[in-house]
Length: 303
Image (cartoon, rainbow, N blue to C red; front, side, top):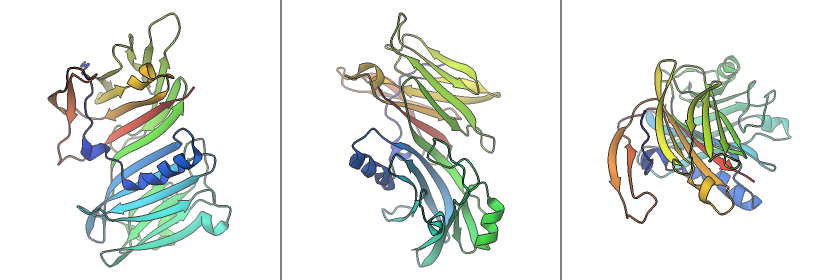
């Protein structure tokens, strides 16, 4: 298995949609650590246009919301629909908002009246959010599919929306847990990242998939950035990590980045200033034509 150092992450994948300012502005207002947030980016066909649809779930002590952004190809304009998931009003828990793309109406229907929640920003079950264009449900979130089709009086779109990537913030001290769909059309997998940065042994890190430790990094202070390939049900998954800030920040806090990608990447050699901590490394280079799924996990270590 490879153990290359991670370099620059592909700009086309990691550039944050402008609507993530919804979360960032709230974080600044609260003067706190980054809140729990999950971002999904889909490719969907709306009003006969192939658009990127971004769904951002945000949650902290004062804010619990879903923001939906639609971006047309090669344009900066966005259409934003923000839903207050914690609304105390009944009409806020079930509603409809509309906007226009190229002269065509697009509707967002939602129903959170019976939604089940956990500590995660997005509901566990008993809800739906439906994006409707030309009497077709082009994107459907949640498990109440029958209710969504009945209320919208629409049929499923001929071209199903495709999940491009998932990106999330997770806060913790030693454990960081998430779920990711690493095989298209299959159930999500449980991912647990555990770290030990103090004690009699050198700093260590474990990455567990579905209860099995797939990667154990000893001497983490030397291997704080790297990648390995693991086999998950005979399916290769490449895992990248960068936990430099956990080890070398003044307070031992900060952000660790993990990427789970269910296919191999092409590699290019990169060279930078010898004085840089990224003086020489290999970095993943993404083809502009590919739409393969990636899961980005930003693990924020707290005191």
